[in-house]
Image (cartoon, rainbow, N blue to C red; front, side, top):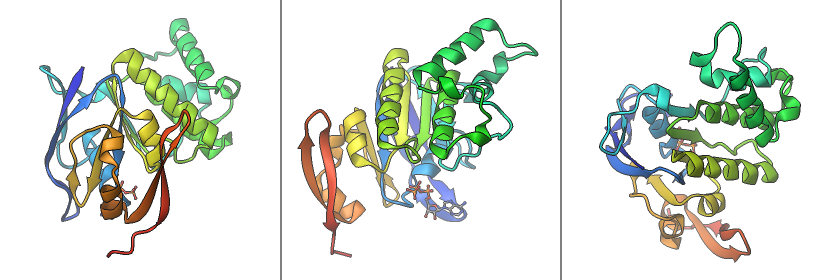
Amino acid sequence: MMFEIRSPALYRGRAEIVGGAEFSLRGGVLTALVGPNGAGKSTLLRALAGLARERATIRARGGAVLGAARIGFLPQGFEVGAALTVRDCVLLGRREALGLRVAPGLLAEAEALLARLGLGALADRPMSALSGGQQQRVLIAQRLFRAPAVLLLDEPTSALDLHHQLATLEILRDYAQETGAAVLCALHDLSLAARFCAEALVLSGGRLSAPCPPEAALGEAVLRDHWRIAPEFLRARDAGLVVVPHGLEARP
Ligand SMILES: Nc1ncnc2c1ncn2[C@@H]1O[C@H](COP(=O)(O)OP(=O)(O)OP(=O)(O)O)[C@@H](O)[C@H]1O
């Protein structure tokens, strides 16, 4: 399934941050949204999630514009409802389905998801008693529990150790594959983007590139011009392309 994205120019205050863009997002795979600090990745994701002044739309190809219930969004700076337990937080992903009692089927699904994400042992803990990385993993679980057709994640591995970076991106990739959902992740780690994402969008200077495979999107000239680094590309066993910031690009 392909999703058609249409975004008008996006502003913060009076400044235009991201020019108008139209592109297709592939279902069934992860797509990386990459670009330097301040490029507008969060601005674009927020607009796609329906949280901006401007109205960006996501349409299943040949279908209607997706409503909020079919779009999942995890912002960059997350706040947690401290009194909630981990289980309750995940269940809230389907708040429309919750009544005064939680149906046993729904509870079993939440437990299964927590177990799959390695969070089963934390199910009864209050969110406030978790580490930052654990909280981030629970919030990802909550978005997955919602089972959106399009999942937008702003830096979903920012608080995670190396094990959980890989585990979480694997789970997100499986989710896309199993459900046909499109998963768009803003990522700073270009090696992770190359390893897990079938496509990459480069956002820089207010312009968004057309989606293409990360290895093609992240060439030496792009890294020099937009990230201002002198890159070295390694090819690691099982990990694919690894981007090493060898040094800073001297050019202004
Ligand atoms: N609330 C705000 N008010 C005014 N300007 C803002 C606001 N939030 C962000 N900006 C500006 O909009 C631009 C894009 O910010 P945005 O957070 O979308 O970038 P980003 O690509 O997600 O950056 P990062 O990689 O640092 O997270 C930046 O120049 C930033 O200073």
